Amino acid sequence: MATRKAKNQNKFETVINKTKDIALKVNDFTYNTTEEIIEQSVKRGEQWQNLTSKAIADSLEIMAVNQNIMFDTLDNLKSQFQTGTKRIKSLFSKN
Image 1 (cartoon, helix red, strand yellow):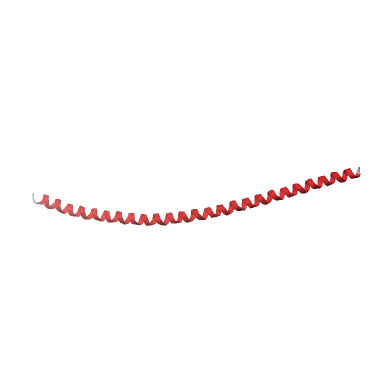
Image 2 (cartoon, rainbow, N blue to C red):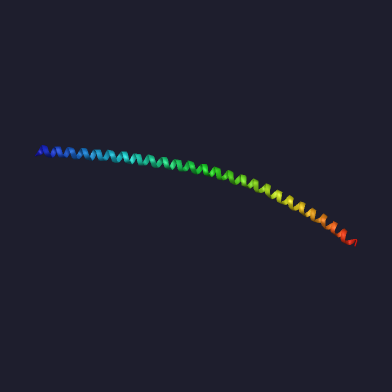
């Protein structure tokens, strides 16, 4: 009976040790996977941040060019309107 208890105890300890080993391996795998996911997330976040900052900088340059075009167009329209107004006054004032 004592040998039977000893054998059962050894089997029980073997199962416990194997379970601990498996739990440690699962824990290590989970930790490493989580660490990789976080590193990749941070890396992708940095890439998106760089892309966004470039897009904003480029869009500001485009907006500045568009603004200059708009003001040039308005200046041209103003001068054309003034010239046209002078011509219309000269046409109708002679009648």
